[in-house]
Image 1 (cartoon, helix red, strand yellow):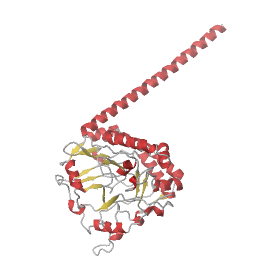
Image 2 (cartoon, helix red, strand yellow; image 1 turned 180 degrees about the vertical axis):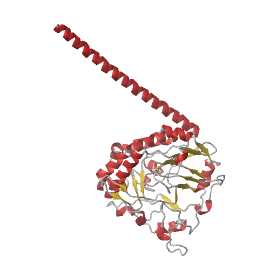
Image 3 (cartoon, one colour; image 1 turned 90 degrees about the vertical axis):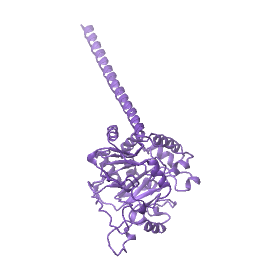
Length: 417
């Protein structure tokens, strides 16, 4: 992981704009269909590829905007995570996107009347607004007996700025079947898990304590062993993400540790889960399965945070991640990990507010990230040295014991003579 961050910092790409100006424009409200590329970025499009290696994109002030790691998730970890997710989904899974009309996904059923073409198209802002009017109040009632109102869609789906109404959707990859731990090939329609030991739906942070998400509660009730297997499988990934966040966004790491300490002190399912099984520093996990989506904009997250997204699957092309505001595309295939301030898909400020906390998070500069990286390397070197000294000490103790044994044996033989 440290090597990947080192390579990214040695491959810094500066974009010709200031993030502060970008944020200011965002707060004024920009219509996605008219916004286009942000000023200063309307030059040659940038596309990051696996062959180009890790990279970090910054603004003109040297503030990281996006980190790109092409081979962050190893093959073995990918396989283990996919198998455990498939096994969980074979026993318990939420309603598919097509049933709940999730606004974060394309909605081809809304545009089938289009006289120009019968093919799937991007849902426009007006179309997604109409869909929102027909969304069920409790979309997760299909998959759980808990009749609890859930704000299921913290962000709204928007069409990419450069795609006009009635323009065809770009070709999407087709997911191939993969094996579960029981050896069965499986293929799932698009859906997603939102797993959290404690969170608050919009507005409820002022009225009632945080609670376990419906999906995690349902998974633990209906697929206990499969859920535990998934939580165990992601431990290594969680550890890597914690170490990565320590370097590229240290203030967020500190805030997350404080948040987790408060969550673990809560009496009940939240505290028990955080203490005994939730190894992630982040309070929420989104696991999207076979989902392809248009652009989303989230307004309920904390600023200067990070969306950290890893890619799993069996496809090897067609998975580009598009950021039209920045005139940027990323090769987005299995093993890739990206980290950027997306105002958080699910790491919501209400989680802090419900616990009486304030997320004190600021954006670091590339220079500060380099300093964090050097500190991490020094700590690793110190651990390696301590381990080496312990091995030498243990080896020396073994040699001493052998000498004592041989000495005692020689004395016994001498006494026998």
